[in-house]
Length: 86
Image (cartoon, rainbow, N blue to C red):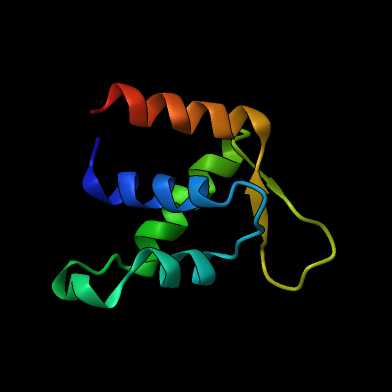
């Protein structure tokens, strides 16, 4: 698994009940110590959209920006992916 996806998945799993926008997720994934390893927001957006399409995230209604949170199935799928990727 690519390190970029691992960082995104790990961030989502740190608080599986949190709601996220792409911008919030991108800002949280990037820490100051990573400097040159920053993830472009487009990479986060692409991963976010794939997770939505696969039912691993569900859209939170009545939000101006696209906002989503992990589904139970998505949480288990990400846990399994991270476990088998190590």
